[in-house]
Length: 270
Ligand code: NAD
Image (cartoon, rainbow, N blue to C red; front, side, top):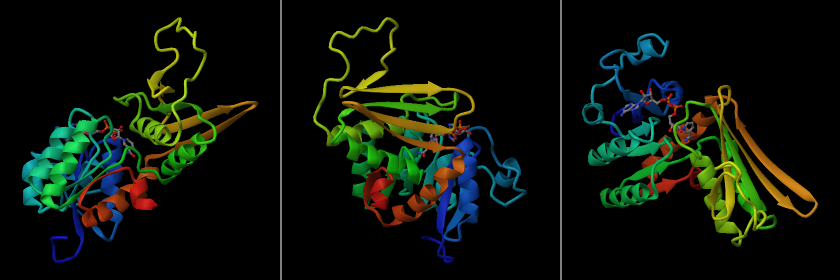
């Protein structure tokens, strides 16, 4: 915390987006956080509050992220942009010693490893979480537990049709957590044949992942287990983007105490 008021100074990147605008409101309403700056693609020098329908709040959208991080003396950068933008944003934050909290999905394992190395060199923390909703974290944890006993599993994730990456970061993370718990299993019939390419979904260590994209959805996932004479379905629904905000606020605070990269909100919860 760099300012005398003891608050954590946060810059929100992608602040005009669906997630970013919720994050701005969360930061403004949290007594431990201060909105130090905001960046979005095309909005420069316009007041953030006026764009988000909150009335003027005295924080204009900055022209460039680097400049904004330095001038605002930021402690934390929260990024909800897109898979193409997030890499540069995180490297900019790292360059200026600002802790990244990343909700954007679709980055590579290599990026995560590189960020962890740089964060450790700098002695500061970072958090990347494919899902900030507490219920989704529990869904993933319960799914990993169930996979020990019911190893045949398929994942169906359902999102709004403006989402750019598929499968979702949550589905990938769920598959990784399940793969860490179960023996490798050959699923489905050995002679099964796709009459239409993609009909059986994506393959992750023998598990199938199916991505649904439709207007009306926010973020939802079912993990379906099949055993002899039974199925088990574990489902989580984010019915509004507010569901992610307690997790984002928690991450913005916890990141101040970390060194290196934490991948997944569960590591801050359990
Ligand atoms: P969105 O398209 O509504 O918002 C993205 C915003 O980023 C836009 O306003 C865009 O102008 C801005 N932007 C793009 N490139 C930029 C750049 N270089 N610099 C500054 N701003 C830039 O998207 P969204 O629905 O808010 O989702 C954003 C990301 O968050 C996606 O990757 C999505 O998958 C992810 N997401 C994560 C969680 C989670 O819990 N981790 C939850 C929901 C969504």
